Image 1 (tube, rainbow, N blue to C red):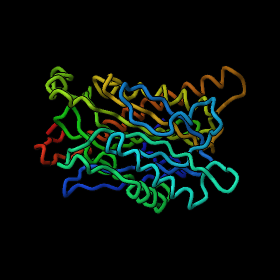
Image 2: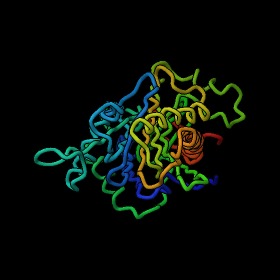
Image 3: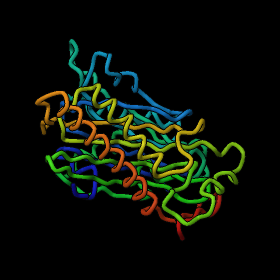
Length: 316
């Protein structure tokens, strides 16, 4: 098993960012655009989620394919950006086929960054969601993913003290399965991989009402998975959030993990024992790569001065 660099190491997966960071803005949108026919599901374990179309990804529902995943700032307001991604998908005939056209399946999740640039009303729009999808579609196969304070991570913070941001990582298994993750770190907690004494102390010092936090993750793999297996993989991947950040999955977090399976590599399903071992290995790798993506997002964040004050880069 070897490590690589980004969620785009999964063939066919592309990522696009759009952000604004002036004139009262400090927010953005990130779109993960998988190849057509990608199967997906989601697991939401935070107590304060801002999500869109996640119920459609339940294994008991009608659809199984996901056309795009939108990660956005702006809290619940920012979910409007998903309609821009949906518009791009419709224009490109990507979606669930219905009489007269298609209905794109575009789930979304948001972090809380309202007002961090100075203007509470400066939040992502449908046009920003469209632009981020266009940016993703324009990327080449296997492209590098911009990290740090870009896209949905533009206004991200940890413990109201340090900058969060976008991070990504991937792992290749011995059987050729690639598992990648992209994370937007806007957490109440701080990384475990630090010598800061009392990791939750900085979080405890945050101002009342500031505990509006979320870590958003997209896990992608080239394995062939059923929707229920995607759901279970998303659930297992939450362990990576808990390994990277303390605390995690709190009442005020919107921690959510999407899982996308592009379906090009067969797992060993020769018997039930082989099937179970294949899935356990993949899901363990998903948790590992989520931890790495989160730490990458923390390491890639830059200190920034905003109307609300100076936010430091973690470890600086």
